[in-house]
Length: 404
Image 1 (cartoon, helix red, strand yellow):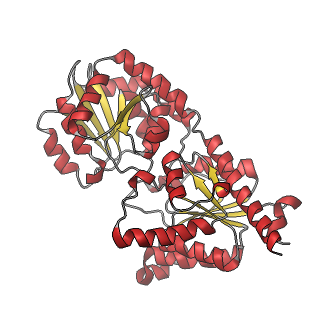
Image 2 (tube, one colour; image 1 turned 90 degrees about the vertical axis):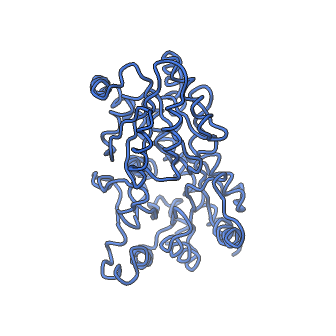
Image 3 (cartoon, one colour; image 1 turned 135 degrees about the horizontal axis):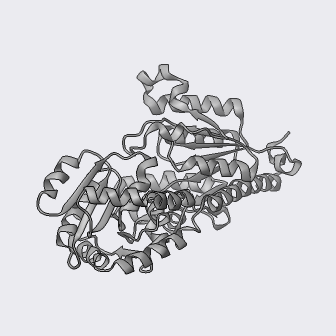
């Protein structure tokens, strides 16, 4: 049977989704997609290890309803010669030829497995949907790199049967590279289980108050950072700003995460700001720190999305972030936090000071955060994704019909 006719005959659509590594928030989304669409869904991960992200392998441990394949484990003998991505690319192409999916969803466009998936789709005439966390405001390629990127990404975008926009900054990126309006679909892909974070933060309230007391944070306005401790995240800026923040009982910082910058940040902390380092935190333990905090601060300028913003908002926290952070573009405003313009220490200190002086204001902003993030739900993301894939398959079939 021709693949173009599967949906019209009621036969289950075969969809293969390629992404880099397991993420803690994705399994509920994949389960909802399968439930919503009834597809034969296969999720292929390039690897379970990515030091640049820092999620533990626990993200893959949960029982899932879809078929899950870790590609670089399929051909372990090739890893020593080709590396993880080379081995994954070979395993992926073998899988594609065996399974012959009706649609391939490719997350990203630069790495070898993604390139192999796009090449296979072009060679076989299989419709593909392109998605990724690219942010228009963080697209800083210049010179020959800019020219090469425009040629490669533009070609991948124009040939796609569908492109998924994950928010305003992401949509602007795809449009800048030639996405056709009729092939551009919306899905708030970066979502978390909002109800889980709201419930878990409330349940751990007493534990969080005791934790604050143990660390001498009673009476302080506690600003939380969650993420890797690397230079581009700007955590040093947050520590300096907390030391300057005016008003109220003062600001304290809780840093939930670890990384190569930790020693330097701890040395900086000795200059006066109250800072508590938790080390690396399992995803299951994050609600404790959201419950212990008064606001989330994301002090980096180059942030494709920032799913911690979703988690914090679902937990009822105000958010301080740069206006070009992907999540902040869609989710943060003066009604639920502070959008930073320049990311200077002085601007950030002023923002922390405004929040530190009024507990009532923080609570009001936090309530609004919870209201706003409700629209960015697992159900909404699944609906958008299903529309994109089915629209792409139908559109590709229609274009084939016009040519014949």
